[in-house]
Length: 129
Image 1 (tube, rainbow, N blue to C red):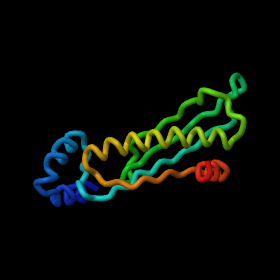
Image 2: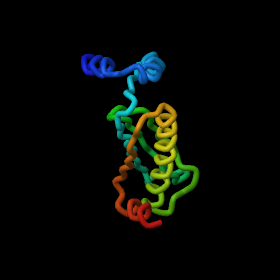
Image 3: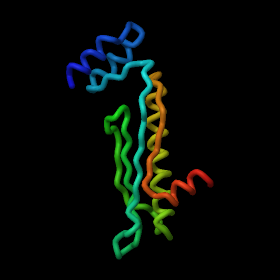
Image 4: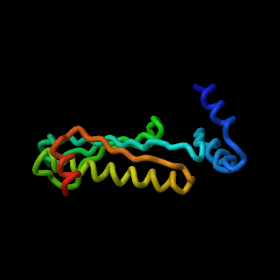
């Protein structure tokens, strides 16, 4: 693993050095000009606790195969269906992906964004609002 990281670091040119220097202090090496996949996975637990019946939003976001952010949080309202609960989880995931995109865009990193969800009704709603 470290050998691959070292080889990637050697391929950086002088234009990339400033970005490399800042990020290497945090243990991250991002090569400018390389396309990174930002993939968000969302899920929702529709069966909330008996006390309040609120669903739980769960998501995680990966950049280039590495986990960079995740969350599990109770939704603020009671959803009427599993699809509604999952749709709210997808909305929160989208917000997080856009936030990660804004950081990487400021660093001049090319990205592609993908969001994945396991609820067919929610995917249909998202594709046909």
